[in-house]
Every structure is written in structure tokens, then in C-alpha cells.
Amino acid sequence: MNRTCSTLLLGFVSCASMHAQLINGSFEDAQGNFDDSGWTSTCPMAWGPAAPGFGDFGALVNHSNAGCGGWSRATHLVPEIADGETWTLSGWCGVFTFPFFSPYVGFGFGWKEADGTPHFFTAPVTNNGSYTYLQVTNTFTLAPGDTAFVELDPGTASGGSGNSLYAMYDGLQLTQSPLGVMERTGGTLALNWDPRQERLWLWCDEPILAVQLVELGSGRSFDVPIAQAESIEVDVKRFSATAYAIVARTATGMRSARFVKP
Image 1: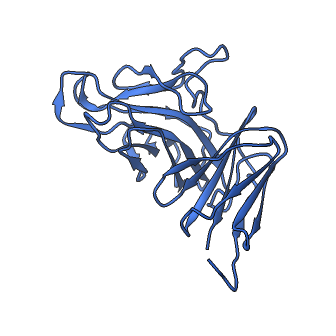
Image 2: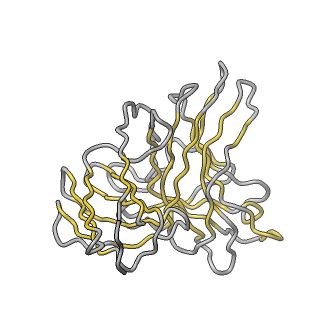
């Protein structure tokens, strides 16, 4: 496709503060065993398959009305989040029991008042049977005594079921953005764009173990082959004109950057 003018919109916002964290967002301990420390669930959590690049285990959370009865959620308190701060929650989830049951599942932020009254931000959701990358950004208005939390919403099995049916989660991360829009998570992740060839080059300050291209509008993800660990070339000719996130996995964590293909 010929273009007289093509531009790649790249925005990078360094994270000035990243003091809040999930005790365990990848559901494994240092020895690689399943670990749901830090999470409180209305139904017992179980181990399940991991998202690509996130070890051997993810977490399974019962759909509501499926296996343990009634309302099902898992929450993680994040008391470090303060009034006026903006945070992004990202990670992977899907429907473990797809296609037999495929409710919409997701995760998001909320906060509870000092008396325990909960409030919830709108959460991104998916009903895919494979792991799907989701991301949401919210700004908190907290009164004294309020506490922010992360919630895993496994959806509801319509009509109920005596069997245990699950949503699956892995690789959840928190990132603060002082300007309200998260464009890059820690470390160095650089992009360069060639509009004539419709190719993108990605560099990182440490070896990259895995890369995915995520279509932000739909949540669809695409694996990117890696020929070299520090410099990666991505042919974007086959991708639609829309906004994307590049997600790079390194030994010390996950880096991400956004771009728009015009």
C-alpha cells in the first residue's frame, strides 16, 4: 500500500513511582510451585495452565454458580495506592472450561471504604478459551480509610452447575503512571519505524525472552518470532491500521510500549 505520509505515534511516559505491587501476580513461588499468596477468594483457588512466558502455573477461579455456589471473586488489597494516583493493571486471562461454558471473565480495580463497602471500576473482559491480554487504567479518589484492591471477576455460569468451572489468570502486573496513561513499564524498550517497508524494530536493555503484539481494541495477541535477543524486527504489513502494544518478557519482568499503525 502506497502512502505519501506515514507516521508512527510513539508515546513514552517513564514511571516515576512503582511502589505498589501484587504479592503474587504470576501465582508461583521462587521454587516454581503454585502459590496464591496475597489473594482472598470466596471460592478456593486452584492451579491451572500458565500463560506463555509465565512459568508452569496460573490460577483458576470458579465461575459464580459453578462448583462452590453463589458469588465468586478473588481480591488482592493494594494499600500502597494513594488518593489521586493513576495505575494500570495488565495481565492475561481466559475461560478454562471453554467451549462448554464461556461467560465473560476479566479483572479490574476497586476500592473499599473503611466499613468494608466495596466499589468497582469497569473491568475489561473476554470470553476466549485461550489466554488473552487485557489492560485497564484508573485514577483513584480515596477518602481516609479507603483501600484500593485488584479484583479477578470469573463471570457467572448461566443456570448454575454442580461442576467446578473456571476462569484462568496469570502474569498480572501493576504500573503507576503520573500522567494517567501508561506507555512503558520499567527499563528501556525502544521502537523504530520504517513506513516504507512497514517494519518495526524493537530494542531492549537486556535479552528478550518472548514478545507478543497485542491489538488494543480487540485484545487479540500475536506471537512475534525472535531471531536475536536484543534487537527484534517485526513485519507489520499484515496487521490492521489501529493501536497496538508491544509486550516484551525479560528475565526481570515485562516491558511494554504502545504504537499506532496509521
